Length: 273
Image (cartoon, rainbow, N blue to C red; front, side, top):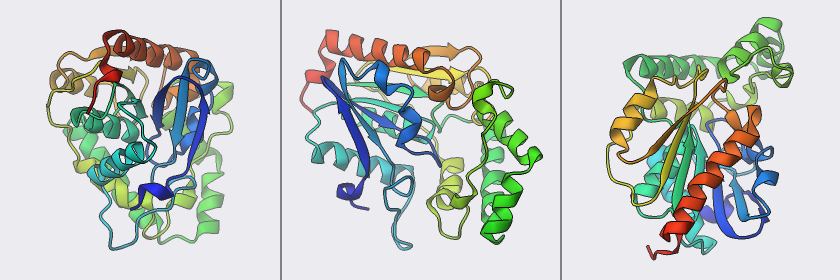
C-alpha cells in the first residue's frame, strides 16, 4: 500500500493533528469535532487504506494493524509532519498508539482503541469476522433491504450509540457495502480480533478515553489499557458509545485539546524523531 494514495482532508492552522477513524468508517466522522479545533491546529483527517476514498490493498498485499501503522507513518513523513499530535478512534486509536511507541507522535489521544479486549471481547470480534465473511455470500441488494429493516436499524443504534434513542441515532444503519468478498472490512475484522497492544513506553502525553456505554469494545477493556499504558491519562466518557465524536464532539474536542496543550507546553511535539 502506498501512502501517496491516501485520501485526506486538511484544514485549520497551527501545529498538526492527524485524525484516524475506526474500522469501516471514514475521515468524515471527525467533521463535528474539527470546527472546534481548526482555529488553533492544522487538522489532517485521513481515510485509512480501504475505507472512504483511499484505495484498499491488493489481494496479495499484507493487511493488518501493523501494516496500517507503517502506511500512516509513511504518510506523516510524506507530508513532512514532525511529531504531529495523533488522535484515533477504535482501529485508528491502535494505529496512533503504535506510532506513539515508535516516537512518531507529539501526543496521542485515543477513544476506545482496539487491542485491549479480554477473551469475551475477542470472541465477539471473531464471531463478527465469521458473520462478515458469511455476509459476503449474500447479494448486495438483499443486504441493503435487510439493513433497512427496523430490527437491523435497532441493532445498529444499540451497537454504535451510547443513547440509542437519541435523535442523532434515528437514521443510523449498518453500511453493508463493506461486506463484499475481499473487502478491507472483511479482511481486517479477524486481524483486530487477534491484535493485542503490548505494554511498551510512549514518550509523549497520552489520553485514553472510553465511552461508558460502548457496546463494541466494552469499557472493561480500559482496565487492560491502564495496565499496559503506564502514565496515560484515563478518562471515562459518560453516556457515550463507541463513536463519541458524533455523540459529544465538544467533549471529544476538549480532551484532544487538553492532551495537545500538555504536549506543546512540555515541548514533546518539537523533539526530533
